[in-house]
Length: 222
Image 1 (cartoon, helix red, strand yellow):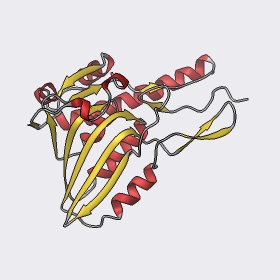
Image 2 (cartoon, helix red, strand yellow):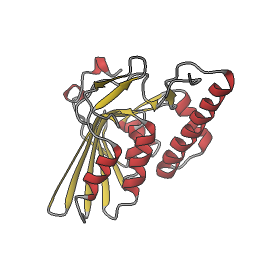
Image 3 (cartoon, rainbow, N blue to C red):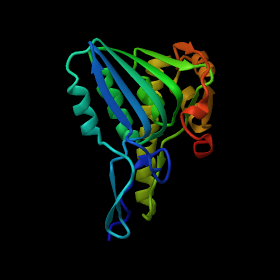
């Protein structure tokens, strides 16, 4: 038996059931990309205790996301819309890198909320727009782990440290500041309105206020 059960880095210990987390479409040289729900959640999961697959309610893999984006062909503008509580950090970093190398101008709109891994993706955009009362949340990467000796757990901590540095680098690239400043915000679990996010450089343009209840039940998010 292995020392630990397989693990993943995520915004929460168990991935909630969500609708498909991305959609892509294009028209007349402009693409619309929507990220909704738990980022990176595939349609099927695997229970390591029972050895059985189960439906997660999610949809899509990183490979499918990249294929959908590639299938758009050449576009001049990508409008990225985010309302997400976060998800798999490795997937978010990969999406950020994929978007950053696109030739098109990318405009990201946070229409409801961007928590955890979601702001990392937003940072790949050339411009980030947000409703003044939208919500942005920054926190450290988290680990789901069962079992393991001291040395194994130390290795997992090193992995989390690397993820946190990677996340801080994305914020620095967008908004400036130091690694220490962003690490402090992440460690403290920092909640920001769109207006506050603009003050620290994470948002470029403020939009009119929106009714957050129109995007998700806040009871299930906060």
